[in-house]
Image (cartoon, rainbow, N blue to C red; front, side, top):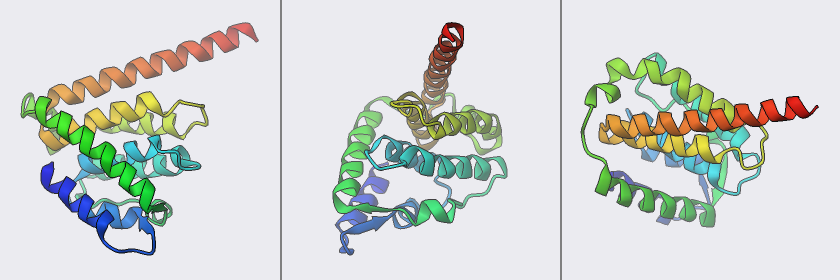
Length: 190
């Protein structure tokens, strides 16, 4: 994780026209980095970027698709790759990732590795797609819980930590439960 973080910091420090494209940052993650890209896109949905949930949910679905067909490329859609972040937003994202990776290094370690192996990732795909769908929905503040769930799953895939993957699934299921309860309340009142 530290090597990836260093590459991302260098990417943002690299002189650009005051913009950093998502394609450039995704390419910095390298191949076979589904967990890192999932974490990266989940963090992007938390930034105050207009329509971030709408745009980056397509990237989350693309990663889920790549995991489903066992493709090691990032496979992000062109509409996601073309998004450009200001240097300030990219730097902010790197600070968030630095904080996440620093904390993850203290907690994450290889355990329950079968849950993160490429042969067993297929069962995660529907859940990741569901979290992407919830992020896609125009619910004020609705990106938080599914984004945290995807961050935990991404960390689990990166660190081969099945416990982090389980924590991400539990977090996502709690978010789905709360969303379902709110929909039920609204329908009951109407």
